[in-house]
Amino acid sequence: MRVTVFGSGYVGLVTGVCLAEVGNDVLCIDVDETKIANLKRGIVPIFEPGLDEMVKDNLRAGRLKFTTNVLEAVEHGVFQFIAVGTPPDEDGAADLQYVLAVAKSIAENMHEYRVIVDKSTVPVGTADRVKEVIEQVQDARVVDIPYDVVSNPEFLKEGAAIDDFMKPDRIIIGTDNPKAEKLLKALYAPFNRSHERIITMDVRSAELTKYAANAMLATKISFMNELANLAERLGADIEHVRNGIGSDTRIGYSFIYPGCGYGGSCFPKDVKALERTAQQMGYQAELLNAVENVNNRQKQVLFTKVSAHYQGDLQGKTFAMWGLAFKPKTDDMREAPSRVILETLIAAGANVRAYDPEAMAEARRIYGDKPGLTLTDTAEEALTGANALLVVTEWKNFWSPDFDLIKNTLKDGVIFDGRNLYEPELLKEMGLTYYGIGRP
Ligand SMILES: NC(=O)c1ccc[n+]([C@@H]2O[C@H](COP(=O)([O-])OP(=O)(O)OC[C@H]3O[C@@H](n4cnc5c(N)ncnc54)[C@H](O)[C@@H]3O)[C@@H](O)[C@H]2O)c1
Image (cartoon, rainbow, N blue to C red; front, side, top):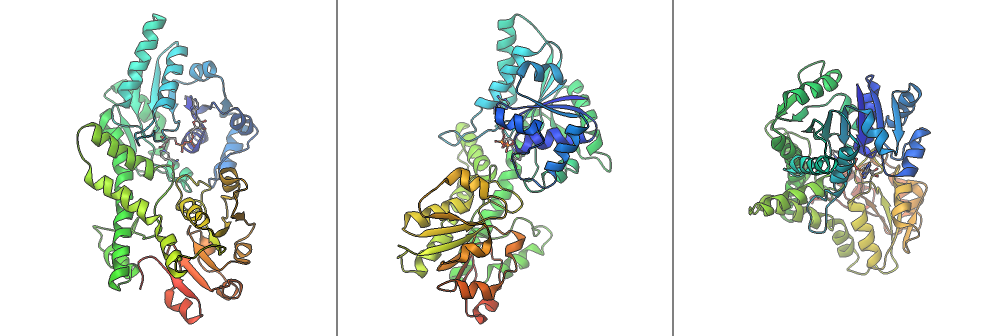
C-alpha cells in the first residue's frame, strides 16, 4: 500500500520505517530540509535502538523515501499520516498549529480519495477541526473530493519504539466510517497476526484514550514519588514498599519506581493538555493537577538534598551528574529532570560535570558553552574534581559502577541517587555517604 507520513520525528520516522519494513511503499515528508537531506543518505537524527539499520535497509530496498515536497507527498499515499509535534502552548493546551497546517496542505493538494490518519497526540475534537480545515479549502477550491479523518494514536515508548510498533499491545482505530476502518485494518494486518490487537471505537474516544494512557502512567509515578517523600519522613524504605505493593497483581510492578520526576516529550505535556481540556469543559481535574504539581516538585528533590547536605552553600562546589536523557535508551532531553537539576545547581553557584551515554550531542545543542557546565566524554571523567555524584538517569552502565573509584575520586564521597540504583547499606559500609529517594 502507498503511505505518506507527515513529520519525520520519533513517531513519524518509526511509523514510516515499520510500515515500509512489512512491504508498503512509504514516503516520509518533513519541513526540516536538513533532516530530510540526511535521512535520504540514511543518517538518522535521533538515537533509537534498531532504527538506524531499518532506515538504511528500507531505503536500499526502495520501500522508504523522503521528501520536502508537499504535492509529491499528497499524491503518493492513499493514507496520509499526520505525525507532527503537538507541543504545549503558553497556557498548557496542545498547540495544534502543525497538525492543522498539515491538514491544510493535504486539502490544497489532494485530487482523489485520501484517508487522513491522525497519529499525533491531539485533544478530543481535533479530528473535527481537521475536517473543518479540509472543508474550507475544498470550498475555496470549489471541489468536493472524498476523504476520511481517522484517529490512530501512537503508544510507542522511546527506547523500544520499533518493538512497540512491530508488536503493539493494541492498535486503536477511531472512526465511524466502515471504508476507512477496512483500509486501516488492512494496513495494520501484518502487526495483528498472532492475536487480535485492533480496537475500533469512535473518534473522540480514540483521541481521549491516548491522553488517558499517559495520564494514568504519570499518575502512578507521581503517586510513588508522593509516597517516597512520605516514607523518608516516616523512616520507611520506599523500595520495600514498592515490592510490597507491586506483588499485588491489581497494582503490578510497572511504573511504580520512585525517582527524581518524569520527563520526556509526552507525559508532562499530555497531563497539562488534558488538564486544560478539562478546564475548557468547565471541569476542575483535581487529580491531574496534583500529578503535575507533585512531578514539578519531585524534579527539585535531588537539589534540595544536595543543598541540605551542604547547608545551602553550593558556591564553587562541583557536582558530577550521570544521566541527561529523560530516561535510558534515548537521547531525548525534552522536559528531562536533569535539566532542572543542573540549571538549579548552576544558578546556586555550583559547577556541573555531566555525562550521558547517548545524549551528549543533544546536551551540546541545548546548552552550548553554558558557564558552569562541562560535558565529559566518560562517566569517570565527570567525577574528576567533583565534590559529589548525582545519578539522574538509570542507564544500565550506571547500575554497577566502580565504587572504589568513585570514593577515591569524589572530594566528599557523597552520592545522591535520584533513581535508587544502589544499596544504601553497602555504600555506607564502603564509607560513602548515600542519599536515595524515599529511603531512610
Ligand atoms: N515521542 C514519543 O515517544 C511519542 C509517542 C507517542 C505519541 N507521540 C506524539 O506524536 C507526535 C509527534 O511526536 P514526536 O516526538 O515524533 O515529535 P518530533 O518533534 O520528534 O517530530 C515532529 C516532526 O514534525 C515535523 N513537522 C512540523 N511541521 C510539519 C509539517 N507541516 N509538515 C511536515 N513535517 C512537519 C518537524 O520538523 C519534526 O521533524 C506528538 O503529538 C507526540 O505527542 C510521541
